[in-house]
Image (cartoon, rainbow, N blue to C red; front, side, top):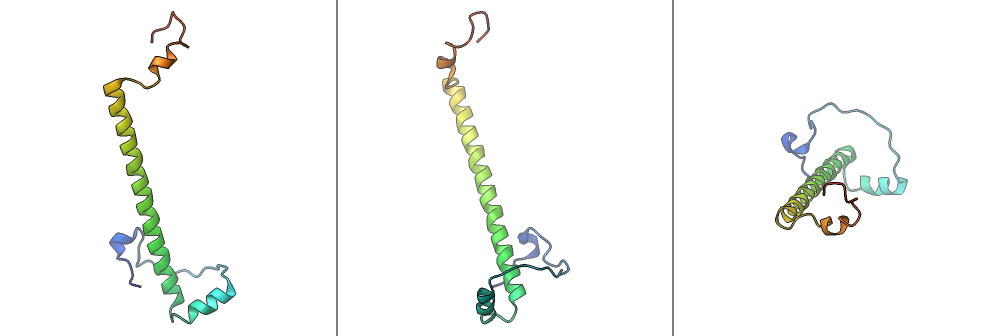
Length: 97
């Protein structure tokens, strides 16, 4: 797995390394070590790819929400507020609608 470029990663890929403690399934760890001689680098690459994917999902969700708001606003401009015909029954006579 290739390293994600510094500019595209969303983090400084050249930052110093820091030792941390994590808990992993012992059998999974043993099996994974048989596939790579650099487990830390593999995990780092997988975590960076996961983070990039999550960031893309958030951006896509935000864009979808913006489009929904724009569509509702366009509907409102063209047809009026959806609930106006129903809410006038609940507004007192002396208030503006």
